[in-house]
Image (cartoon, rainbow, N blue to C red):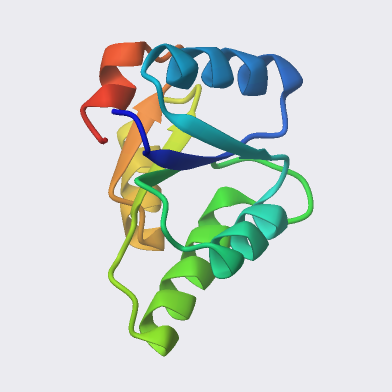
Length: 121
């Protein structure tokens, strides 16, 4: 999977390091940011990610709002929709529905495994 790049938005340093390790094992470049505002800015600057892994609970801007703004940016610029995967420790069906309603493609529940990430590359 050399040459692929993903955007990870998570405010927890442990989760950031774990995700870097998992993507590294898949030979995927991982751009990491700490909140939804930074994710939006990174996506607007470089919208060529294989997917965005978006924690739903972050400071400054949460994953729901960031996803809505990314979708609005894609629409305004005529860009194809990037896969956006919500990330949460909460596997409640209402959480998945909220992710889908915000424009995410799916919800991954922590702890996640390398195989789960690879199916979206």
